[in-house]
Image 1 (cartoon, rainbow, N blue to C red):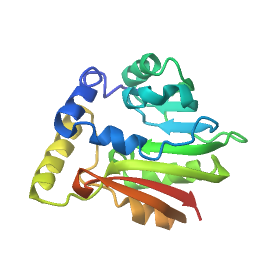
Image 2: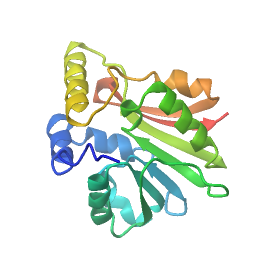
Image 3: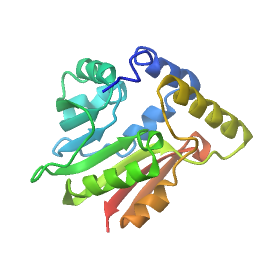
Image 4: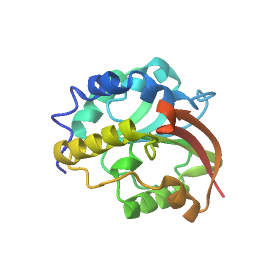
Length: 199
């Protein structure tokens, strides 16, 4: 499996902070509360740097398709109790999680891929489990639309992303019978953190 992030990995976090400050980090951690006794699945967590401040509370599995990003996550989250896995997540019988974190990963996937992932995730949650999404939604103004288009173009070239626009997450989630329980906006509403539970 080709690592499309091998060139970006050393600079990814610095570039993100340059453009957005700590807003994306705050979106990722907004609902990260009372997690010390939970089993957590993180899919597409990148270099893991944004989780380092509370890594001692993290236990579960960490899936990433980029080997270079995963290697950085192993270093950044060395004090966690996470198991690091390279590749595409697939549900395993009898392996359940209390929370599944999808942080800035769904916007890299095609709609049919998101649907398949949501179906796999549903098999992997406890009865009271929930998924935590943090991602870019539709831009709210001309500046955001300009920056959004530039970001999509950049990642299509640099990381082989195939999307040309932002997914309609809520339509896809509602179609798979998920229910939104909470939401917090960041970056003027362009970025949202959401909690969803299976309906």
